[in-house]
Length: 496
Image 1 (spheres, rainbow, N blue to C red):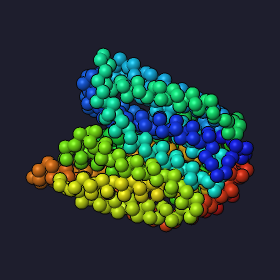
Image 2 (cartoon, rainbow, N blue to C red):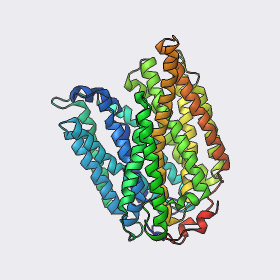
Image 3 (cartoon, one colour):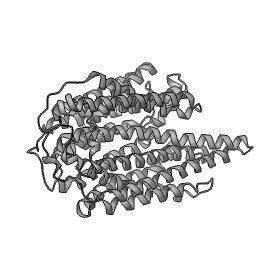
Image 4 (cartoon, rainbow, N blue to C red):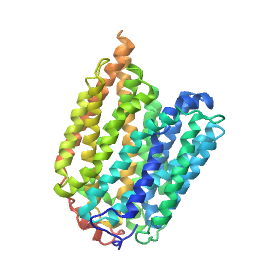
């Protein structure tokens, strides 16, 4: 992305480029969770096991983890319109292939292609926002971004549940999930290509193939290993995770070397900013806690309270909607009062809500579950918008794309780690209790309580990071920082 400020920077209103990118991001992120309710239909129509069917979601997540680390380099090499066209074109191609898939293998390839387009959209949106929006308006605009990235995953299972109720002759119901998405994605792409303007000029640079390999295999392997912990065997997943961590370490060493005498795929100098590093830790742990609750609640509601997938989606939908709809308000409050007034109460709310979930029972009123979930989502809204804005705002402009890429990568890793953590804790606890003679239902419920307790304990780290964050960005004029991207140190980044 650009090394100097774009003439399209605006004050007091949301630029058209951001509106278009938010809409497109909403559409592509919706697909990350839209297949959750379709698993039983896939098993029946395509004759696959439940483990195999789960890959329509796992493969999406793995692809995101593998590709996002490369987007920092990619976004600096192409124009805004080119990046948008590639992202939406790849997404639409994957959607068409998925809709027409004659076999499960072809469907899986389509989902991987879909994820490839999705992986570019989020860093593109964040990088463009930080470039074209004036510093004093970033909170408000980032709030609109929060609406897209939080409401979309929450709406995915609900929308898919409704679509799967539709019966169309000679068409498998799960294919409708892609058929309905195609015209929407097509219209969004057309509008974007009509209205988008390029932000800045592409920069020359050589793609380092070893870095691409290490990032794809390392981050993809890490997420894959974490996703396998639910199988009950820990030896093989642990070895895969260890291998992924080793490759990521090699990737990091390679980037440090390229920062001195080449073009890094992911510039690790973003971590020299104290504010960005703290925001990264806070975001990762908060996202981990959120994903843990997103896994545990459906298991509790469907397996123990015997609600249908659609009923479960409707119960958790208000929390996701509240989180998204509050985003713009949280952004305006951030612009007016700074980050600490939002992040500290938000982090406390996260811990309190997760602690409340440790009291779940087979008779807990649904209104209490709804209230706890809404508190969790509202608290996350209070934390995420300021954290994103503070963290990226602490970087100079030439590192925005790399900062966005690292945030997106860590989100995928945190999602996988959060899922693995809560499922492992729950399974280990319930298995131990069953061995002691406790009935399966009681053992599973106790395992879920312990998993929520672990998540609540991690939320205490979120509170600590919130207290350490500054009220405003430590580099408010970072957008004007010189590009010296090939030097080992940057004064704007050393300051913390």
